[in-house]
Length: 232
Ligand SMILES: NC(=O)c1ccc[n+]([C@@H]2O[C@H](COP(=O)([O-])OP(=O)(O)OC[C@H]3O[C@@H](n4cnc5c(N)ncnc54)[C@H](OP(=O)(O)O)[C@@H]3O)[C@@H](O)[C@H]2O)c1
Image 1 (cartoon, protein in one colour):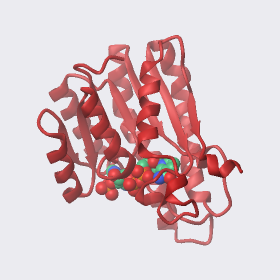
Image 2 (tube, helix red, strand yellow):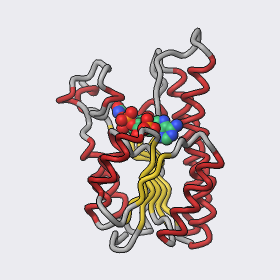
Image 3 (spheres, helix red, strand yellow):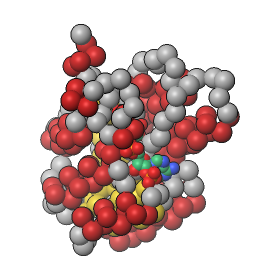
Image 4 (cartoon, helix red, strand yellow):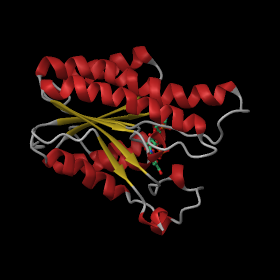
C-alpha cells in the first residue's frame, strides 16, 4: 500500500506502541487519526504530529463515542485505509480477583476492539479495500500461568480476527493480528525480561511496514513475534 494520501486510525496512541506507530505512520505520509484517554499525553502527541492529523480523546469502551469519533474521522479524511486496533490494558491474575478487574480488561481488549471494528469494517467493505491490524499478544496464542484474564481477552480478539480474516480478505481487505511477546513499553516494564532483550517498538513498526509491502495474493492471519531470549 502506498502511504501517500492514505489515512490511518491508531487507538491507544497516547503511549507505548500506539504512540510510536502513530508517529511512524505520519512520517511515512499517512494522515493519522490518533486516540486514547490521557489528555496531557494526547496534547504532546498532537504537537509532535503537527498539522493535518486528528488527535481525539476517546475511551474505546464507550460505544457511542467510538461511533461518533470514527464518523468524524471518515468525514474529515474521506476514508480510513489502515486501522491499528491497539488500545489495551493488562492485569495479573486469573481468578480470585475483583470482578471489576476482569471487566476492565475484557471491556477494553475485546469489547473495545470490537467497538472499533464494528464501525470500521462496514466502511472498508463499502470501499472494498483497507488494512486492519489487531493488536493481540503472545498471550493470545499461549495462556501462561497467572495471566488468565489478559489471555482470555487476547484469545478472544484472535477469534474475532480469524473470522474477519476469512470474511474480509476475499473482499480486498487485509486483516492481521500481531502477537508479540514482551515489547519495551511501560506495560511490560515490571515483567522479568530485561529491557535490552525485549522486542523494540521499532520492530512493531517494521512488522506493519512488512504487512503493507505484501501483494494482495499474500495474506497473514497472524504474526507471532517472539523474544529471542525466551527461546533459550
Ligand atoms: N508491551 C508488551 O509487552 C505487549 C506485548 C503484547 C501485546 N501488547 C499489547 O499492545 C498494546 C499496546 O500496549 P503498550 O505495551 O504500548 O502499553 P501502553 O503504553 O500501556 O499502551 C496502552 C494504550 O492503550 C490506551 N488505552 C487503554 N485503555 C483504553 C481505553 N479504554 N480507551 C482508549 N485507549 C485506551 C492507553 O491510553 P490511555 O490510558 O491514555 O487511554 C495507551 O495509549 C496493548 O493492546 C497490549 O495488550 C503489549
